Image (cartoon, rainbow, N blue to C red; front, side, top):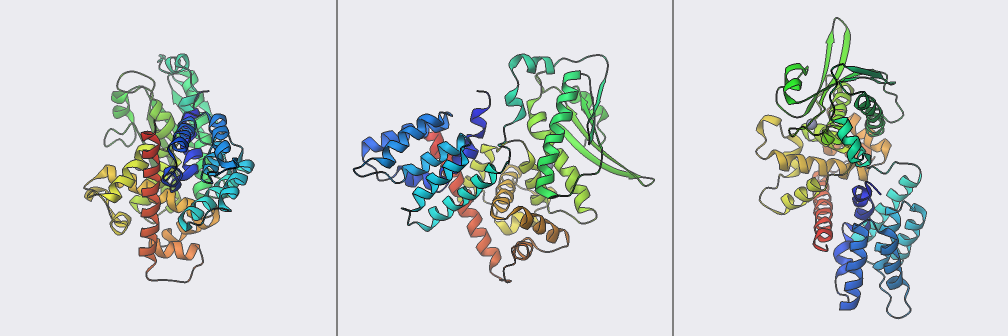
Length: 395
Ligand SMILES: [Zn+2]
């Protein structure tokens, strides 16, 4: 099944950011082997097998392994059986005394409930393409093909690509709308130009100061606003540029929507980039890993510094991007949709990030809140990275 691995993180992060170490530690050897095997199955997208193995441990009459419920729950979550995943999480909660794990499990239950009510499980659109389709998308015609949807007018030199980009732009806009705008509709039209290659992009893009594979621009002339994205069809090897479809398109579109949403107010760089990365079509494990590692080492950027960082003064852009992604996705997970949108509104009004969160959550002002937030985020980011690392070690 194409793309199944891409949402393992959703299902499996699930399983235990915090809890993986707990699942694996202190078991007799034979149980450890079974747990490892179940985890491997889960990682490989074999959720039914993972569930069967883990259920056997969780339900056996003599010394049942309570923690195996976490794998059962993760497997069901991966299979999008959200209701029964919640039952498994609850079975674990009944036996779980650790406060960290309880918090973690409650968060997963919340995510399952949200997914059950119709949140799409994100799978990068390129994962659904066959090799033959990718090849076809790399073809360049002499003529330009134009296609329009509700919000986009797309131009490229490949008819199929033009349609695909238009469709995926609408999907990305819905995701960005959920993130930023709530119920509010997006009332504008965006022009999207897909240039053949880097050279053509650099020669034509409306705002291409450096090579990034894509860019957005928002200009107002004589009272008329122009919204535009410039993208690239082929990568440097001449293949269809899958990153354009999966990442660059939603990322740049999000910057465009943020730019207009914030208007004259300045959106802090970490938030602007964090939102744009969150808008991309699937979780990027490398960022999750890098953020966790950075927070444990010398490359760490403290939350205080991250929140006020400016592009020109970034000493380690990759760590900055990874941590920005991590902190914004952490906030998104901690806040309800409405709280998150209120948080953005308070930032736009000039509140500090820590004040904006307290206001959005209606918690009494606490001058120590910045420290509490930093500690909670760091714990979470490190646990997520350790989980991913443990899964890859279990291969
Ligand atoms: Zn960006």
